[in-house]
Image 1 (cartoon, rainbow, N blue to C red):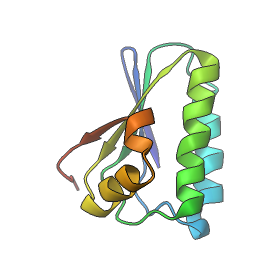
Image 2 (image 1 turned 135 degrees about the vertical axis):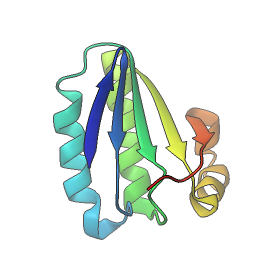
Image 3 (image 1 turned 120 degrees about the vertical axis):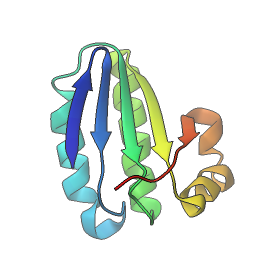
Length: 105
């Protein structure tokens, strides 16, 4: 995972799948990254992520709640058609600013 700050935008780039095997580690890294963010927008870049399970969804919802409590905006950059479909099925695209992007790297 990489964290890049550009002005009022903090981009958290996840380079692995958001599944039970990795979610605890990713969640911890996200929590640590958020400690440094006081204003602006957090961008969760999961354009390199191909798979997400219910635990991964829980990580995203936890990030959403953390951002709300700190008054931060949140956007998700997603490239995987499967993850976009999952967000639509779970109606998370109604709660979150989900943007379809081209996968990079």
